[in-house]
Length: 461
Ligand code: SF4
Image (cartoon, rainbow, N blue to C red):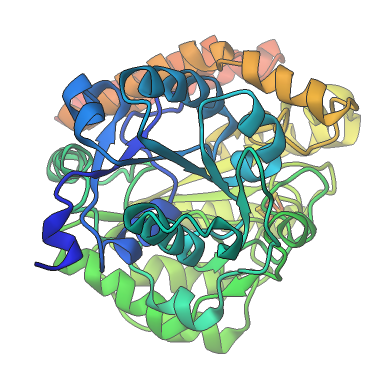
């Protein structure tokens, strides 16, 4: 009998509950890691609420992700509950937040092992040690336990990166079921969930307050950013079509961070998919936007008004941005989402005038993206010691996202059933509730516009 058949359901991956937008959201790298380990061991994926006492009693190893800081409080509590039920179980944790706070987490929880930085190979080695009971943990790179902290010597290399499987989610049946449902009923609006094509690990830009930036990658992952080969990216897009997905997400903007040959290699054909594409900065060439729109059936194109992914007031060229918005608007199958910062809108007069002028001239759809880039581990905004920073995130259960999440989930529910109703009405409500802009005239104008758009939609039904 091989190790795989021997260990049926003895290794679990559990995604801790958190205030993320959708339940159907796990870190993009989780499938890559689990599929890599699953070459030798059988692993079952579960949401926290599916995890039963029976599962815990039968399992030998539970893997939790603490990637987004919002999962931190629940993962800590969950580890304690798991150990009470089964003191012999081994709990392994990995992810960005886990790497950053590894010393604090290991001492304040019932977690046995934290893998820092890139996890694929160390995780597999660790599982082998636990299963074989050889306990030679000093040999595992990037490992923190209550007693040891081994050298951070493993980082993903480019060749492995191109071979990891980011798309297969067979190991997580309920996640797969939800994703299949979303793709079955969602028509043209991509949802920010699986699948997402991760064109690189670690951004090539270096915005001040982003954990994904090049310098933070070096600090936490001890490596440079890695770019996936364009042929692999293309293969992944084609796999998405074969797997029956209707849309694909690109949160990793390769268009502004690579050269024309790279872009060409990916965008040289028409894919039967809708796309969500998020630019980190406006593309400097209108042709690149054309190439993107020609390669997909339609979808959402998100563009910040500044050069640092919505996190700064370094504005882009007004005329170029206006041309882009107009171009997207003219194309009936795509819609734009212009990212701006409410903070700079309120505090910087030039920024405010730029946004308002752009809005009046294009009637763009806008999204306040301040929440992307504020208050996360390592952003230095708190100016506190790490211990205090850790306690801050431990108490932060994401209450400020409850309303936003409720609206987003409602939006998802209605959009999948009645997109024509949802888009004008719910987005309007969202805009009011989140008070995205404080300028009254601006808001009234937007209300009237949306009212007429809705009226127009009903008239044409
Ligand atoms: S904010 Fe966006 S563009 Fe800037 S470093 Fe982070 S991911 Fe890259």
